[in-house]
Length: 472
Image (tube, rainbow, N blue to C red; front, side, top):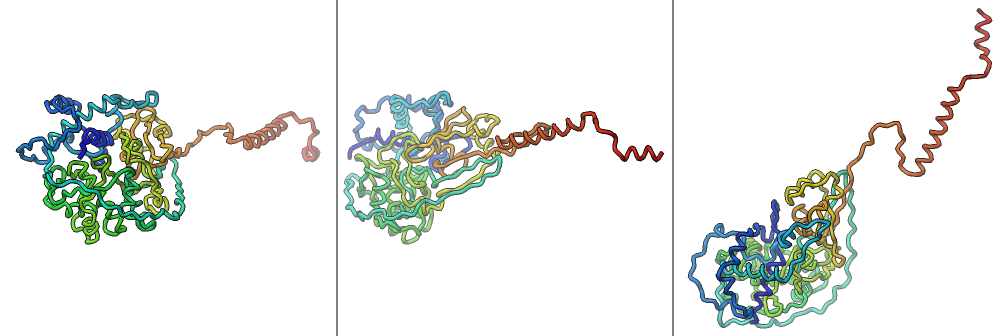
């Protein structure tokens, strides 16, 4: 099989984990390696003696007799993470501001990071037993050929914020890259799509193969033996991801995506969690597609997925950094009508927002909350690609959404100013031109009346006064 180790390393490294202080991610929540750690790794003999031929078979390296350490003995830099969340500052080498936009990675930066990653990966060997006779074979196509069909319009969202609150309206749940689990279920339910229709829709340009290795492979969880068969472990993971009530073809699509994701990461399961006692429908679905995986250009694809994607999936480079050819935006037609997470409204007070931003991103915010959040949107997908915080710092939209505890990087945000009390004053407060004219006329009339009272009277004394004098 054609070895695309460099290409896969780049996708795994730069598609990205975003690690930031005080926030945990579902995918790769461990802290990023320090500069000292990565510098030391890059200087090892393994890096300096890497073969120049990138097509050399890494799997043919001589096996090493080693004792597996407890997972607590491993630092975060040694985990096999598929898409590490990395802050722009970590990758750009300096802080970005509104005046100085983010620095793009050069080819030399990427190459250097890949070398360091390869050195670290060699320190965490896989437990997989590679079958010498098993070769991937093509999977017979089973496509429905059915169109999407009529899709109801997207639901309308309304929000009423209180003064002093930020209002977030989110569309979907999760990063939005790759397959929408909710969308897969709806395509299977309402469009009659097969699992292959679903997979080829969300991962365009990929193709299906059967690894023929499930009888020989030993999957690991966080580098520890799973102590169960591939079918058992895959069924538990799929059960945890989509349950047992989704459409059968959607469960099969999830099984293929999860298995491919595990194979991409060296047969190690680091950010997918198994759930015990899967129902028979999940086991049967996984059995039907056992060993099937998505390939791209001769190697396993990075089959990312999330709960739902707010009407369309996101381009990988919008949410993370790497532009993966098969992780491009596609429609997720049914999400807008039937996704329960489409149009979720959340209110966060200005004081809570200040605490969250300052504690998670290490900045001191200005006094005007209206200046704290400036999102940049993708013209194609509507996802927030980056957020400028108070003109001081740029962060990725996904990192920001995780920090704020909102469901998706596809969001709208607004701030409602707190009620303002005018100081007591004798001066009228003009609100618009009509009020100004009305109040001006009233003031003019009142002033004329007061002037008339103050002028000395030229009229004769009243008859009442004259009568009193005469009586006396």
